[in-house]
Length: 104
Length: 336
Picture 1: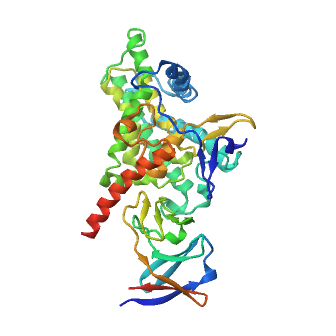
Picture 2: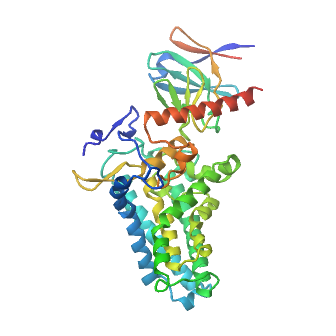
Picture 3: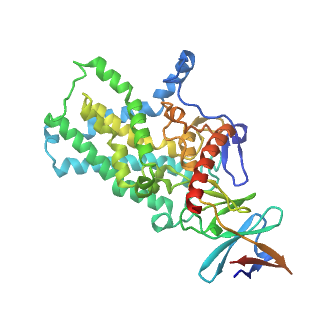
């Protein structure tokens, strides 16, 4: 059953930034786009188990820190080799300055 | 020097040259004689000539006499290994010192705006690219380089391989000397294409691709199997009737010649107003995008096999079309 979890505060993530959020044994990456909107994907690159929160956000793409593979963090779509498998994305909402993500 | 007259830099500081890269005007139809003549000096200068001179230096002052090479004795092998290590340290180290340690030209013309020394990654020994790369170069690369050299010299010295003399075979050996880069390009493309096959990539070639932001020490930072395959190009001179000097030249072309593709800068500044092209962009694009430019552009293999990327938006479109097809296939299998 899906549940909403508080991931961070709005100000914890810079514009065009990303932070890590761990929940139980799962890990996520929470992004803030240049427009100020928030998004959430699986935390680990689908190519190798490297955390995307250590990567580089430019516009709407996250670049993996290990091999520079890239994903559109809004859709999870892989955009550049070596990853070919898309990331899973998670619904996000902002309430009273807190960022919540829905995890199934 | 203002690098933005020659290219542009994106938000993360990566430099992209304005002009698309081109393959050499060799093996093109219809022939382009004027373009060929204009390009011809670049075939020799500066690297090809330098490696040829280094070969003659080795032959004259480093290698022992033929009688000594008939036996595998530690004295001459160890001396050769040490000289090879010192030479690589000085040659690769000169680029590293000027461009990456002293940062003499800052990030001007630097393809990747970040510095490898400032990026820790678990992909590397001790999480440091330079330490990892140097360990691989001196710990495995140079022993393999020297071992190949020793085996080849021993084979010629003992008569196991036919030793043609320059006096009696000037035309054939002259031609062979001229096509050393062509042999290298063909061998490199075939080997490189093979080690991008999934299992071999994961086992062998992924080590070299850990350096997505290549620097001089990345040049020979490979899995030992790849080092053997790459430097083993010199073994062709045991198959083709040749001369040990040309075999050595072939080995030097591969070993010392690995650096231009990994220097990480589009131009190396010599003075405030003068810079030389590094010819690194073709291979840099391979490190960045993985599935393009398996060759170095001397022979248009990548154009023939549909994997060419010239750094232009059109090149991006072609690459992305291939990528989308592959991605759709992989995600369909995963969804099934």
